[in-house]
Length: 393
Image 1 (cartoon, helix red, strand yellow):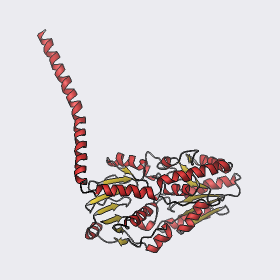
Image 2: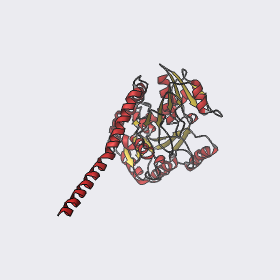
Image 3: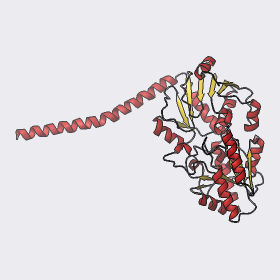
Image 4: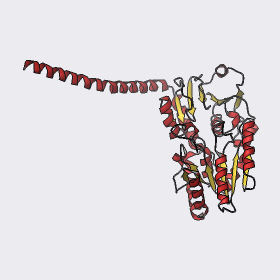
């Protein structure tokens, strides 16, 4: 089978792009796979950053080209749209739309056979904004374990985006909180802010501002780590901080919350105890006081962190629970779910079963509409009979 995977944000090499690569490498074992991107990334770079080998996968850049025409020319049997904010209609015989969050308001997904959501939080908003069902397929989270000898390190991993651009990870707020802990007497601990820097001078300037603000404090800001270096950072860290969504309203700005939180799972797999902002996807992952904590404001973040730092036994116990919890969201689980979906929608009798389900849903809707109408007619008829009896009397 020929499978096309579409991701226009591929060059950013973030969590969604790791998911694209993991799926492509897996499917390429039995199928012909091509990733269609806006601008290409060398295979060697992907292996360095993600630790994934895409040597059996073709990558085609669509910059300055007609995307639909190029994909149609390749003639795929299955099209997997894993590009955030994409409204491209499905150009293949079968289609899967993988939604990271429904930020687009007006979108037509009728050409796709399945819509997936990366969390129950995302699924709720897909139904609310787009009015369509979706299947929850948690993202492919890399196992970053086993834990090594833990150091007095608080870690955060995420792309460095300026506050005015991208899906901002709020590193500046974490830095502010850590400086507050140091000013209050925390000694011997360090904060590591790790990630890739988004394209554009404004994002590089954001990293420069962070470095200036961190001067004279035990803070290390590192961008563009190779995969093995990133893994070691996870393995040696004791606590993992996460702040995406902080300072925004979940009701008014749900797209600015953490939709799932792959880096949280990866930290847990390496035995780093997560302390994440209390919104979105992290609520589905973290069980407070068992494998991590959820915080609502910076004072609570500092208090929970101090509590863990002062209680090494609890820190060790929660780290073990975090490792166990992370296995629910690993790459194998993600790939198994995707295999089941692909097998289902490419089965020979899929169209017949789809028609049956749609017919059943239509009948249920008709019954739902018809029932109150029938009740109304019964009441109306009863009222007429009552009027007729009154006239006879």
